[in-house]
Image (cartoon, rainbow over all chains, first blue to last red; front, side, top):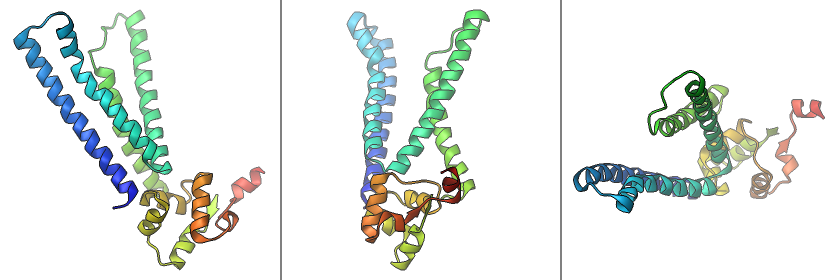
Length: 136
Length: 70
C-alpha cells in the first residue's frame, strides 16, 4: 500500500469514527437529558458532548491536510474556500434580513450543516470541472 | 507550464500509479501534472528531476503564454 493510500485510509477511518461518535453522543445526550433531567454543570457537559466529536474531526482533518500530497491539498483547500464563501454569504444575507427585514433567526445548526453540504458539493463540482478540462 | 513527464514515464514503462508511488503522491496528482492542469511545487519538481536524473529545465519549460507575459 502506498503512503498516500494509507494517508487516505487513516483519514477515512478517523472521519468515520468521529461521525459514529457524533451520532452516538447526539442521541445519547438527547435521551440522557430527557431521562435524567440534569441541571447545572452536568447539563452543560451533556449539551456540549456532541460538539467534542466535531472538534475531534478537525484534528483528524488537519492531520490529513498535513500529510496528503500537495495537489490533493490544493483541491481540498479550494473546496473549503468555496464552502466558507458560500456559508458566510448566506449567513451575512440572513443577518441583514433578520436586522432589517423582520426575518426569523435561523434554526440551530443550519449553517454548520450548510457548510458541510457545500464542502461536499464543492469537492464534487471541482472534480467534475477538472474532468471537463481533461484531467482525471 | 509544459512538461515531458508523460514521455519520460513512458520511456521507463512506468504507469501513472508507479510514478505516483515513487514520488509519494497520488495517481491523480501525476495525471494532473502530466496534463498541465497542475504545476508542481519547487520541492516536488526537484523530486521529479532527481527521480529521472535530469535537470529541472529538461523536464519543465515555460509555455507560450508564460513566455509572452515575460
